[in-house]
Image (cartoon, rainbow, N blue to C red; front, side, top):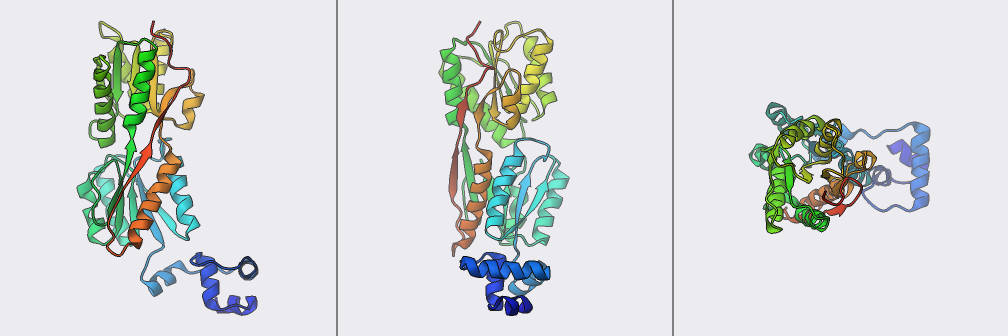
Length: 328
């Protein structure tokens, strides 16, 4: 680094600031330093830097399942914010397995990350106590209240749920079924309870109400139980877009047309929702924004002297497409 500084005509501290993006540097100076860095094929030694400063450049991000299309945009939002501020991300995937989740918590402590965003609702808060005990900031999704070293992000599902119920009532629907997410997932439970309460308030008694996994196959299986009911619903609310797409596939194979016979509504607005046939009406969760808010929540909390957590909010909204229509 001293040689880079000598050739660029700056101090070693300036080279450090350019590479770590810790201070504003004049554009011309930054360009000159980066040209010398490229010519010399110089790479900073992050391990040496951690030993020298006693601080890691890592933030942790914990998700449920990398194959779930809910997460890529969230990861992009979190990682983009981290990289823009000179940090790296340690991405961990629980795959809904408790033993794997425990190993991840240990790995995060051993890696001495600065903070961790827990973006899976299948992980109990008690499991993360080691992170807080080690002085690491943690941000949870849909798990209040905030406290020291713990911030929360509340996704306002109720807003999108209210819009979706108003939408189907306006289309004349009076019989609704619900296929919710897993019973051990607190976000899934929140959505299910919100749907049931909202439907009851409009005089619609949801039946049946079924819990399933967040997979296409789970939605497909759940529809079988709905179709076997004596009185079939005219609309099915699903706890995720993947569940909804599985439901629509089974309805199609059963000779039931969507939305002419039964309307279907999902949650998340993943990229595949628009490509479904028919395109899926769904409650949009702005996932890239969610990832950015998760990083900002950690960054702001760790800069506070008392490291007091805060609560942040994300709004949802209904996106109307072609999987909902007038009740038959």
